[in-house]
Length: 399
Image 1 (tube, rainbow, N blue to C red):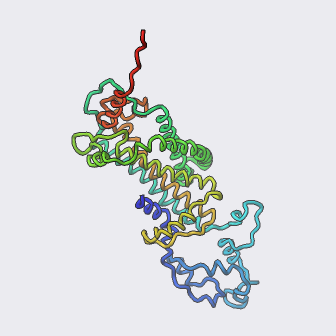
Image 2 (image 1 turned 180 degrees about the vertical axis):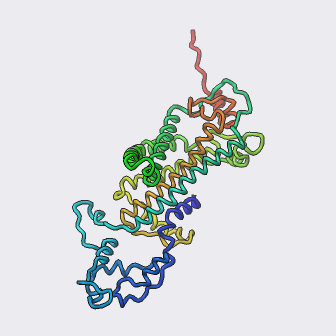
Image 3 (image 1 turned 45 degrees about the horizontal axis):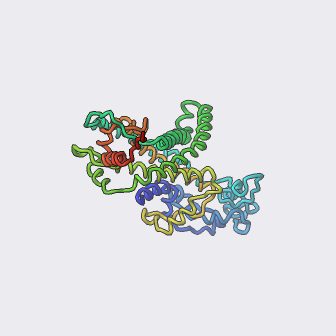
């Protein structure tokens, strides 16, 4: 999990933070009255990060401005560029009718980096991950084929999952599919849907997608809690998992490894859904209530204290974030983790349908043939048989 956290943080933060170590030495700005110089402009054009404190702290002070008769002088000490600079750094005396302090933020340059990363690497890598997952599964199916039963069906069935378990599973699955589809629509709509199907269609689609996404999130979180409570005891690591991993679930060798109710592969799926699903839920709540549940300023403070930024060779993470920046980091994290979980779920869907004979019955009817249970979950089948044999039989009433 530490490696996964490091990778996700690297992708999410590399763009806005990577350039912090390339700060150029501050030039002499006495000739410009504290304003930017030609060296500043050339440094930005080269992609270097400059210390812009001189701009942030000098937003129209007549005492610092060059005289009107001097080069780059200003009339009255305040020019249009200084006004826009004050707006950019939230230093201007702006009054708004609503929105409070947040409503006064008229220019937020961090949004440019967020937008470029969102429409570029996030969309390309995220969709590429889903596409690569589907291609790899198709290649695996062509090479391995469907996992068939080695023994004929017995006609005797054992209950694999109870009704409440299947309800929670399908509630989680259905809500996640809707969340994934609508989330992708919102992400790629402006770039890929509007140019081909029209802005009106895209607007309607994204409006509906947002309503569905925000409301289906609640059933998803409910199902996530139900799944965790019902199955966490069956998904704790055990020694039998080592043999399953060694044989890669039966792909290596001729015999199928023994397993309890959930094998090692299913346990990986379970904990991926719980951990990543919880992360998606928390970041989603932060996006729904950005002013009540800010996450990243506090999280970055903790990560800096742990030295996480040093592990990946980055400057300290920012710890003072505006609500807009909180939402931007939250949206990136939300989308990145969602793409990773979608790729995992695609693999899970493959195994539960096309990849393995009889697997769908476990979540379809809830019952599986004993031959299937013996092949894939022999220890669990033995446990179920033991319970049946030890169960007290109904007494015959006396005559």
